[in-house]
Image (cartoon, rainbow, N blue to C red):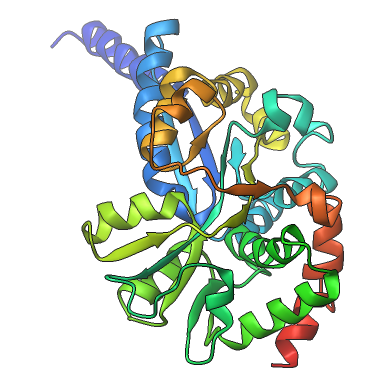
Length: 330
């Protein structure tokens, strides 16, 4: 082959490889039980982005306990976006200067495109007859829950247990008494939501699992329908799923527009429909009404009984807080 032709072909190959490596790649760092949801979101977003821009984009995902993920990003994990299950984890990153201080104002609904709530999963046929929160503190009932120090799933379970006492007219003192009894029935705290599900279904730990409503769909897909029954308590908490662009990473990579496009996509009817199929409550009311599994239960917000998640974090979950005290006294 002629030398100049070889050089030309070499130059074309180099240019092609440079173009390939220039393809934008985003990393979504997320909470433990959102794996399957974001697998479907990513496929849909990549197709929509190609149609809208003519460009290819790659999206990778990383999952673990929400707080552990936030710490990993703070410590240098190059997430382009974070999609968490509690606002405190994104506030933590805002305090570190990793995401914008005003991250809540960057997207609709306080930057939370979806919500969930806390339900119970029980053994097939519900042998312990668990119907509501009071059944979880009965003698001989073993409860599987996530450690509130390591996962948003655990924090929401704790706040749901406390808040349901208040929603029924009880005092904070009565709520403390209830939650103390509840954690006496927790044999071991799981690290994250998926770890808790594994303990309950694979290792047969416990009689009831407190987890996100969305985990019910994941359980049926992963372990086969009918392995566990979902119980809707009379009262539960609204758990927002907040999102943010990781300014530190996108500034370095020059992909702020792509990261924003990805999070904007979560608000589209297509993405809201995917959320509903995964048992995650869409903000779109019309889509929410289409899915009968979202049973109307009495829901309360964190703000109603705790002021804010940041305040709940300070009082209940920081080192030496209310959770540490009650758990140490078991």
